[in-house]
Length: 272
Image 1 (cartoon, rainbow, N blue to C red):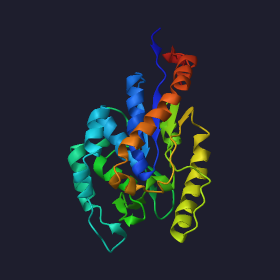
Image 2: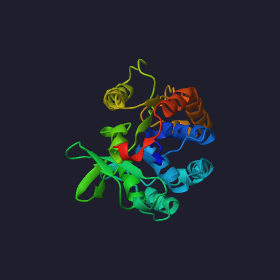
Image 3: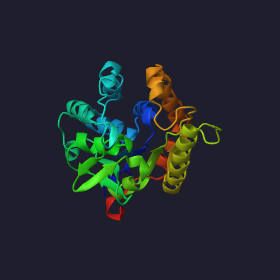
């Protein structure tokens, strides 16, 4: 009887500019020939996950996401619903996703957003890739919310910072989560930093709850990035962010190999 390989899912978490670490993680998984059967992503994880699902090539994804002249040109100031309108971002996403539908991607993808009215997690598995990713990145106050299927959608990190459960519902037998957040325990005294830290604490505890269902957690180390960390991009520190993702993934490779070996393939008739 032909055996079926255990399916591996990768959950890429929210975290602003720290999302460049996802590139480093994917590079390591590629080098070690770890097959990725499903991807879920929230916010920064949504754009990296969607690009990888489309191109299945980290070099191509990195080329797109490190075109900083293009990225800096995406700012379009708004005074309604958010600092930025997001129209230029939608055009940019349309260009890089080639007007693809989620169901057309090579790797099954779930983009996670949040229903702004109810606070509920919204899993987007079909429809326009660019619009879904834009919704998942709609940080309240920063970006205008996205109208999608009669809902106002906001950033996916508000409901599922590392969307492991979405992977399991897609059919993943082995789940790998990538959490990108600042080190907990830093003391910051100014009002802005305290408000930012309060959100980070809520997201940390929310991700801890969902990560109980995760088989392998890749947890890169970051400090002084904040919720968004866009200043790191302008400081030219993207390369070190990618490298930290690589370091964290390499440190977990033995665990990934072990779990792939111990969860041996089983006859398809017994696969639930």
